[in-house]
Image 1: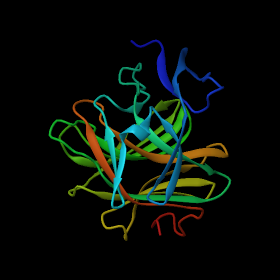
Image 2: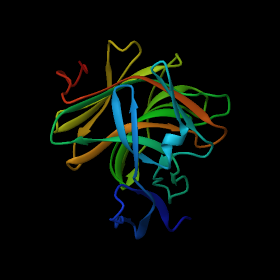
Image 3: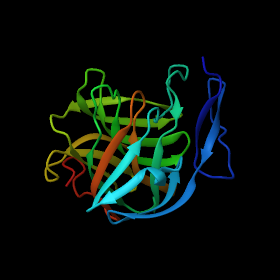
Image 4: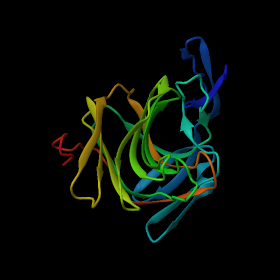
Length: 236
């Protein structure tokens, strides 16, 4: 049993005081500054020196996740908890609507269990969400949402029979919805929940490889706007 969970601190000066059943979360690292203009998005913050794993060629961002990298707060006594993922972030004003969209192509491999490319929304070390295109236990490639409020849930959605996907996260300041698309045109909602994040909020991208080998994910067609979808059921 892990008695002390090491997690992400979103500020350099404030430590987490969240406790779950008496277990205190101790920050493992701080939000770092960076300055990367990638795919029309200006990333100004990062976690775990993420900028060292980034390259861009002809509008395609290549994001390498070394073996053992993940971000997850395991509700089962912390057995699978990790705070090793490398993440690029940009700050947004959560008092305004936003829509964050990208094309994701994870580096799936034969033995890369839970390899994924992610879009993320982060407020602090125990309040965040990641939207993953992930390889499951049977080698299938799935839409996965992980929402963390103290500990992480883990929701597996549709199996996708192609190597890339389009993701969209949109907020009207009251709710946040997650959508996927096979072609970037027709969208399917997979998750909607209350926007209970603070005004200072971050969105970004992440590549993960929790188990074996590295995962080189590709991100393209990034878009971050200050408006929301018109129809939260259709994602359009």
